[in-house]
Structure formats: C-alpha cells, structure tokens
Image (cartoon, rainbow, N blue to C red; front, top):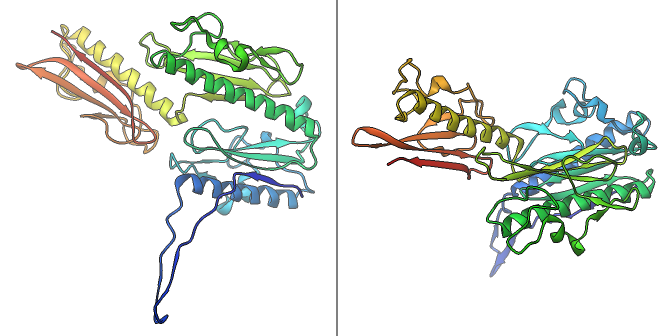
Length: 369
C-alpha cells in the first residue's frame, strides 16, 4: 500500500538525566499537544477507520453517498465508539465529513476510484485523501492513491492550488483596500488601478487543468470542471464587501470545493444573529419615538414588546444556550447588547459578537446627538 502524509509532526519528550552520582533523576512531562497536533492525530484515526472499512469490503473505501447521517454513514461505524470525532476547535462532534474541508478544525475525506472522480459513477472508491484545515489554511494530508490514475490526482491538485491562490488573492486585495474585498474579478479597482486579476500570478487568469484554457476565477459560482468562482459577500448588511465565497468544480463538474473567509460554519450563524440583533434594535427604536432599549427585557415599545420579543430565538451554536445576552459578549457564540444612557435617555448602543477563537467577530456602535 502506498501512503503519503504531510507534514510529519514530531512530539518532543524532554528527559533530564541523572545528577552527580545518579542517585537522583528527574523526568519532565512532555508539553501538552497543541490543538493542531490533536487534529493531525485525529486524521490518523480516520485513516485507520478507512483501512478497517476496506479490509472488510474487498479493498474498497466508502462512497460519499453513504454520508448523510451517522446512521447511514458506513465510515462512522468504524470510528472509535461508532461516532464522529470532535472538531478540536469548535468542540462539536462533526468530523470527518466527505469532501475537501473548508472550516477551521474540519477533517475531510475525498474518495478516489476508477471513474469515480472522472464521470461521477457510483463505483466504490479504491483510494482516498484525508485533508484537515487548521486555523488559517490546510494543515495536513494523508492519502492512499496507489490504485488511482496519477493524472487524476495531479489535475485535482491543480484545481486546489488555484483555489488557494484565489483565496490568497482575495485577502491581498482586501489588505490593500482597507479591509474591503473586491466586488468582482475584473472591474472593481484599487486606488492604483489594479483589479483582482492583476494580483494573480503574472497578472493573468489561472489555467484550468482540464482543458488548458485560462478561465479562473470567474464572477459568481464556478460553472465547469476545474473552474474557480468568486462571490463577494456583505455579511454585515452595511453595504461593504466584508467576505467572500471562492468555490471550484471538480473533474466530474459537480463536486464543489468551497472556501470562505476564515470563519467556522458556526460563526456564520453567530454573524446572522448579530445582524438580526442590529435590525431588531432599530425596529425597536422606530416603534419607540427613536429611543433605544436599555437592555433585552426592561424597556418596551408602545405595543408592549421588549427587545427580546423582537428577536428570533437564536441559540449559541457552540453551547446550545440562548445566543443573546445583556452586556458585551465575552464567550464564543454570544451576541451582546449594551444600551448607552445619558440623562435617563438611551441615546445609543453597542452590539458585539464573539466567534470560534474567543475573539470579537463583530462590533457595532451607535451614539445619537
């Protein structure tokens, strides 16, 4: 069996040798593994599950079609305890998934097989790749592709390389543009006149490995095998492009690989709750002669609604507790509200939201005259 994994992780163990006459020796415990070292170790657990599956299924690996639920996921049944592994960043039991991972801490399994990656046939895969994403980018790959046409792997790797290049270009454009992402790939210009495409290697569109033409990225979703698509996002609803989706189509023209700004899937829910809080506060003020609420539950509109009444029953995606709280948010998944009071009148407010890494995702402040 041919296997390859990158990178190799070395765990150092420090042992202090005996002193003087060897009557005393001191052993120092090795440092606790980092989060990303734990993710890499989990990838090897997934690899063992894949090989155990193949040992009982004539050398074939599980298909993506077996993935929708734990009950029907044949790979999960070979994991320890028959349950998914915990994403080391989110704390949620969501690993692995099928397909290339796109969120921090996620582990993805990409099955390969004779015809599987070429035309979407449902034959059982005879190879696989395990990929994990760290906090910022791809962390590790483990694969068994000895039975797969190397041209297929090379083409897929070229698509993934183009995807990562588009990702880096999107961030570089925003870095040069005060944090605002490009509205498109060919028209929205930086102060010096450069557009998104000008920041790509050579200042040209990237080459599609499946037909050799330069077609990536395109505005909108990818539309053909090997193509990369770019879509800006206004996640805060404030008229600024503060995010994006970059996607790619695999060789079968249907396998979508997508990367977003560096948020977890759960942080997308936190942002949605944050935006809804902003809308609800302004709704409250519009019904209350322009005055904002002091907190979630005290002040009421003329119709008797508190701010909480105007909010959806959003839950913290990391804990399952209510997402909204009085006071500034301090823990992942929370959205906080603070009314700013002057001379007995609430003249403004602060809303904030905290994301996966216990860092502030969003903050919005209003102070009227």
